[in-house]
Image (cartoon, rainbow, N blue to C red; front, side, top):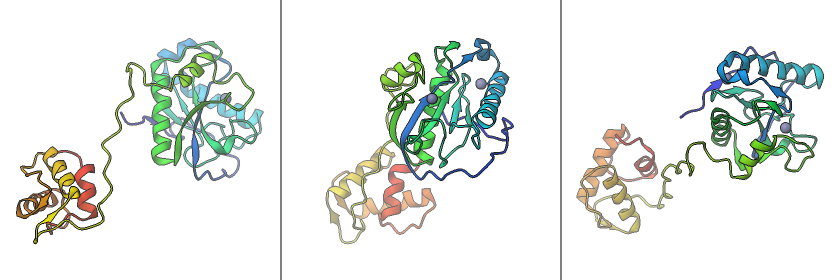
Length: 257
Ligand SMILES: [Zn+2]
Ligand SMILES: [Zn+2]
């Protein structure tokens, strides 16, 4: 499921009071909680999430004197992810000196009231984690605010979840990685004459996975060329019957039809 973003304009965020500091890459994400009471009634009313995020922004700007809400993103019990400072901006919620290492993602739970993170919060945090990995050049780390800093944050239940490896709720294993594209072999696969090699076999095998009738024999002859031509036309790319870098990549990455 794709991330369900609540953009700043959707939650009526206040204008920031200054320029963000550019964040080119991070080691990953640090997870936070509110550190205060979260009304359990929030579970049944997303409007409460919106006003809570607004009040956190107000506290950070008016109380802490920050330019904006401190968090990069905020995950609510409804598996929605509020855009805080967003991608490529230094957060202000990790403590002095630690900000540059991680995006800051807040789960809307507290130390009273709603303490146990609902599945929607955990999914939302992980949706944000995947989002910053894909779009924000974030690394693999998922840590708690208290890692490397003296604080209770993100509270016992969330921290225990982080220490367990931050699994998706309801599944014992995280979803498998999408199939990865083998590196392009560095030569064009073409015919004539017949070309032979493991790279040919690897590509033929993938074409078979795609449902083409093809001999997986490691020899690129007229049959392979015809499959290549059909695949290229299917994908709307130049049909030259030659497996170059683009055809190679699409062989793995194009959606299966
Ligand atoms: Zn924190
Ligand atoms: Zn909500």
